[in-house]
Length: 263
Image (cartoon, rainbow, N blue to C red; front, side):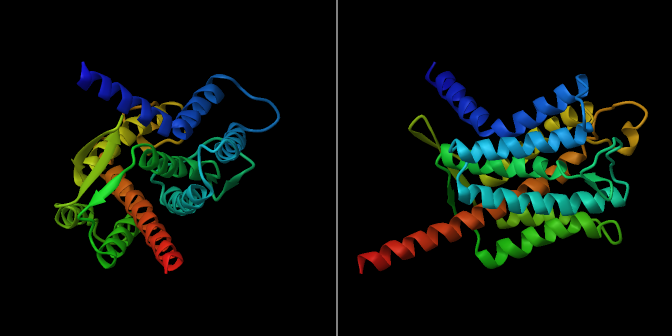
């Protein structure tokens, strides 16, 4: 019973951390079933995301520092969307006033929602990292993973080599988290895989409600290929590395300030 109670508590904390993604999914479903007036669906989704982001900060569910991190992810995701839509990897077939080169601006919030989840789960579960690799290793690796999403269209797809590097670099790294006052730990690589898998499930829900569509879904919806888990896995790694690096930088700055004040 104690284990079940802890699992339920953990699930509740995870659910609270997913508020932004849940709002996006609910909005996708409702705007698919109900035709809203005045402006196209994609524009309504952008307004809903903007309002939700404002409410998250206004109510204290997100801090200003977290908002800055989320904004970075919004821009990173939007850049990736512009390129992938141009390469016909997927498309946004509906009309919208807030579309740039075929990409609706609300799409950046789908990436931002992943960052929102990571930031909130980090804070709620009091996450700590053990055996975190050096900064000079983490930054080039995350950069290489992100660039491979672009370069594999013109060169070799090295995602599997990068995945191998992740296992080598983070093979001894652990994530510590607290559930209802009890500390647990998990191999960092396993946490990457689990988050990537659940995002793949979310992707299937999103494409079902026409958030975007892949070429094989243009005639009728079909399950997103399981191979996409590897793409989300790598994207989650980039997201996690950026969040972890920024938090460590902020932690070092805070410690330096405390030490200076003590002196």
